[in-house]
Length: 60
Image 1 (cartoon, rainbow, N blue to C red):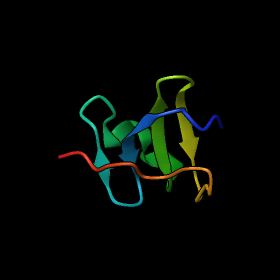
Image 2 (cartoon, one colour):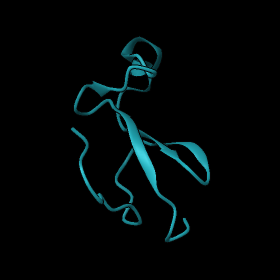
Image 3 (spheres, rainbow, N blue to C red):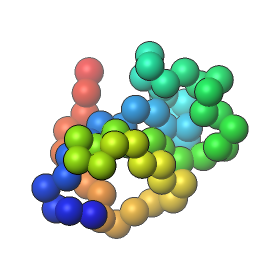
Image 4 (cartoon, one colour):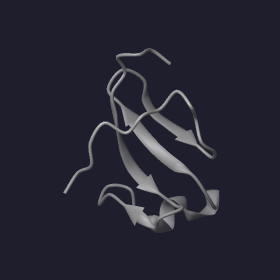
């Protein structure tokens, strides 16, 4: 991925956290992982750790 690509985690199955626009019932079939909405690329699902990703800040 591009080093300047920023995104927002829209859900984490592992921590059972889902944004309002991404209800658990629509995504829990994936069983694990996170979905990130990148400004540059759109939605990308990760089912395991990716060393190219870095948490920049946490939301409220």
